[in-house]
Each structure stands twice: as structure tokens, then as C-alpha cells.
Image (tube, rainbow, N blue to C red; front, side):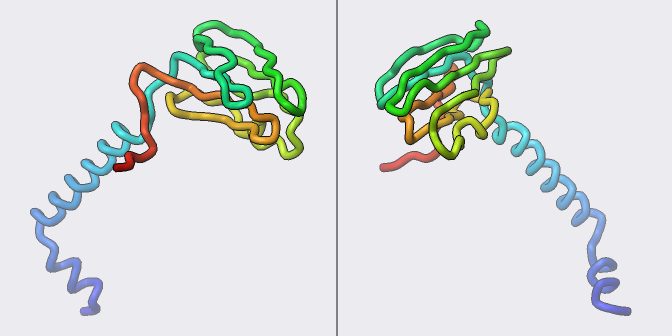
Amino acid sequence: MNSYEAIRSSIKAGDWLTLLLGILCVVLITLKLWNGEQADRAIIRSAGKIFKEVPLSRDTQIEVPGPLGISIINIEKGKARITSDPSPRQYCVRQGWLQQAGEIAICLPNQVSVELTGSQKKYDSLNY
């Protein structure tokens, strides 16, 4: 009898039940807490100041001025994204669609950002 078979034969039915319940709890907690809430508003900033605050319920296209030029933000079907930006690396454009509260896309060279908010403020971490 090798060590694998010895370990397997020493595990009782109650051990399997405990293991199964533990896995089920981890899956349920992950599903409940991992996903953020659906966003309902977008806060658009330019040069650190709020440029516009818009609901995600209306499809619209917004042109936001920045030091390098105009950034274009699209809002469609409860989601928002930066579709065009004059920044050289296009990181904020590649970010794609944002839809959950707390998500943000930032174009640092052009100083433009889009942050989605919901009814409840979401924190990455709390500092004391």
C-alpha cells in the first residue's frame, strides 16, 4: 500500500462532508462578494476637477478637453468607456467597458478620467 492509498483510506465520510461543505462555502462567498454592484452614474474628470456627472441610463458621447486634446467617452447600455484619447500609449482606451461601481479608467497624459459610482461607496482598502 503506497502513501496515497493510506491517506485515502484514512479519510472518513465525515471528513469528506466537511471538505465538501468548506468548498461550497468558499464558492458561495466568492460569488456573493467578488462581484461589485452595478453602477448608475459616471463621474468624468478633467485636470482633477469634475467636468461632468452623467447617468448611465442614457446613451451618449461626451468630448472632454485635456492638455493634449479631446478625449471621447461613450456611454451605452449602462456601461462607459474611453473610446478615443490623444495619449501616446492608449492605456485608458484599452481598458474597455466599465460597468461596476468603483471601476475607473484614467488617461494620465491627458488628465482625463471616468469613474463609475453606485448607491454604495466601494473601498479598495481602509487606512487608519
